[in-house]
Image 1: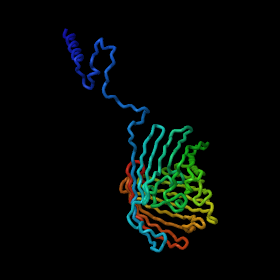
Image 2: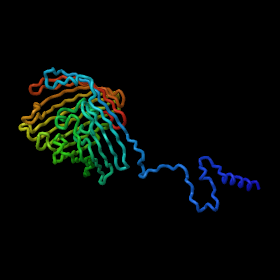
Image 3: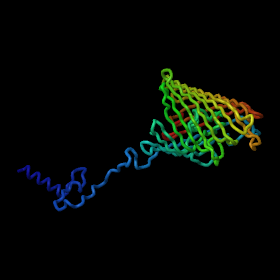
Image 4: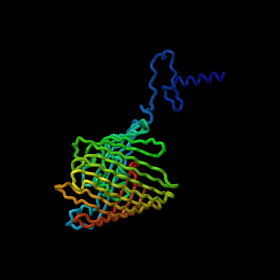
Length: 384
């Protein structure tokens, strides 16, 4: 009898609208027989479920910000045409704002705004990366830094030295190449199971400084091989080739073999030795059509936060076209640049570099001391 009364009492409370913890009133009401055909009431707040699993509805990209501050003092007299008083003042060499986000489980996107010193902000990168294509390949479409040797995918503030070596920068630009087009890369099957990768880019005709209204396209290709060596080292080597309209008219061909060796016996000591050659063939420069140069860089990292390095750069400079309004001498130039770098934190770096550059033509040798401070916020553009 007591059990029956208790059940009737609980049923009455539920019918009267008493809710259990965590349940809404509408969920706990017991409809009458006459209400059975009526529409069920709204069940309160619902969970937001993505249309594509793993893709959020709210756009929250990873945002990275990088800045490069520098102070330089050189030995050039005011009468030298290379003398620039603005470079003897503390200055911001470069700044970047980077936004990165996955689109879905198969593609990522990035948008980068570059703010160069003394220039207008521009879009340096805007691409979509398709990472899961058939035959173990991937593709990138839009505006991006193409793979070409070891350094081209790195921004200036990411370099292990203050500036891009002259042997490379004289042909790809001080900031590296920027391609507008598409790239396909993937693993090269081979019977020896070697780690071979190929990268092929088709881009707009202004890749190497050709006129933007050219109807010709630019082509780049890289074959890369890497492997582990010894017990705690790695070796990467390969060759990149570019064919594009030349800023001097006609076409231009660049061939860049490269190699990098890294030895890391433990996490507190890392030795990196890298080098790249540059073989260039340009038209409309007469006896200056063919050029060759190379650089080698050795970097030793110790005690986790300290690095010392030495750059040896032999640049076979292209000069300018005959009759050009801006006369730049052609010839071979040697630069020696030792430096010391202190990583104040993981994303803050202070570097001191001394650069000696030999004379070229009627110029005089240049001695330059550079002090730079670089910072990177976010997880997109880590410092090297």
